[in-house]
Image (cartoon, rainbow, N blue to C red; front, side, top):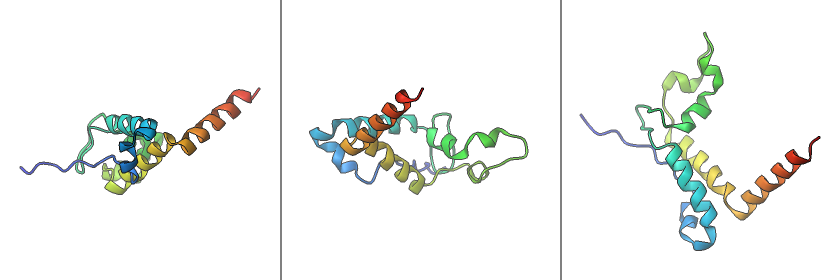
Length: 109
């Protein structure tokens, strides 16, 4: 039986993670990849966070099946887009975005 090809949870700007100045980006990227370590193109393990995010909670309701629940697969493009956004959160601009959002959340009565 041929070995299944694993989806790579690597962002478009992965080369940036090699620079010491981008240590937080690297950490975000590494931790995201760990959360998604169990996914292959043709099957799932319980470790694929991206699949559960894309399938959504609605997949648990009787009579509802999302497109992801139907095909039970996360594409390489899905994985690349998600990994790119997660890595961006560790960049200076992404971190500022997270800080601003958290500050607004804390400021709410």
